[in-house]
Image (cartoon, rainbow, N blue to C red):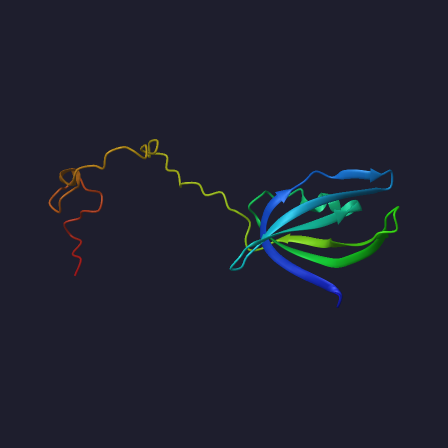
Length: 144
């Protein structure tokens, strides 16, 4: 990161589609929700080939954005002078691990999982220590 580069970390609040401004210039905006006592919604701008850097991320992802602060002066037709700022993104990356897909272990003898609202089995259905059919019960196996 160069001395004039800045970094911000926040939640991807919104990502807009790329816009073709001129035949040689296109831009894409993203809005990050920056944490704090009063969270701020800050707009950043990606230009040129960097527009695609935002594609892999979904709204809600925590991102780290490296950017450069740019400013310019503009004089209107009536001589009115105005100043504009932009936050030009150089790099964008996910913070922390990628969201993982969790799957339940499968067993060839296991049936389908019980529905969430299915009743719990009664305690009387549990095997007792004298139940010879219990898979863990072995008369020669003394636990002490």
